[in-house]
Image (tube, rainbow, N blue to C red; front, top):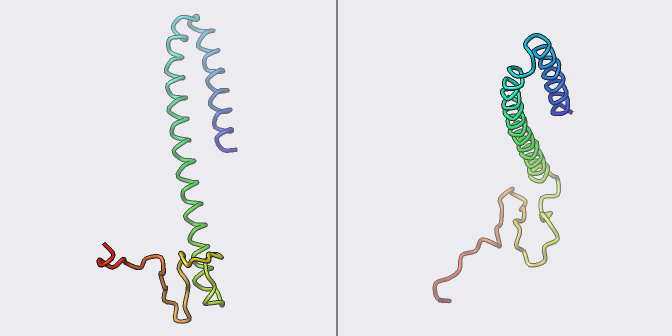
Length: 111
């Protein structure tokens, strides 16, 4: 919604400004000057694109924080993260420590 509003406002003000320049100075000089408007429009699009990426990243990090906070403050302390039957995910114990079955180191005797 914000991007659409910015685009509509930018295009409408550029058209009005271009029309007033054509009325006062003819069409050659304002048309050459309109290239600057196009460059500014591309700059604005790139800034809005970067801003949308930052907002999405912030939203995803907040969502991950909420998921982890719910998991580690839940009353069921032995609940696994998923229904993984080969124990590749971490399990929470009663003391709040984490048992990591998937991160066991291999012994060197196997090689």
